[in-house]
Length: 91
Image (tube, rainbow, N blue to C red; front, side, top):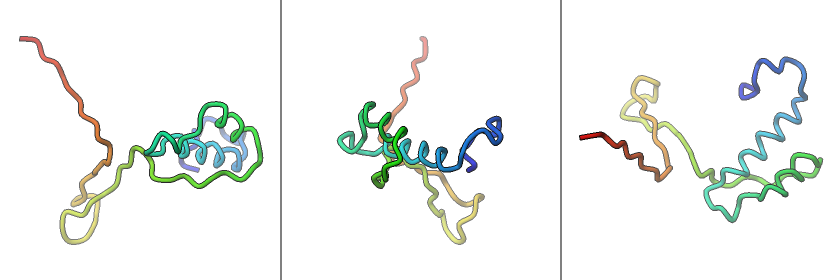
C-alpha cells in the first residue's frame, strides 16, 4: 500500500488499488507480446475476473552484493534495462 498516493486518504478500496498495480505490472513485461493492449487493460481494470500472473518486467532494479553482508552501504543498484543515454555538448 506504500505505492498509493497518501492524498487519496480513505477514498479508495484496497482491492482496486491492488488490481491497478497488478495490471500495471502486466503492462511492463519484458516481451511486448506478453503485454495487454489498451482494450484489454480497460477490460482488466473494469472486471472482477482473475488476472493473469505477470512475467519478467521490462525494467527491473535490484541490489547486488559487493561483498560481505548485503546492506545499503555496500550494495549497488543494477538494472536489466538495455538503455543508453547520450548527452550532447556544444563545441
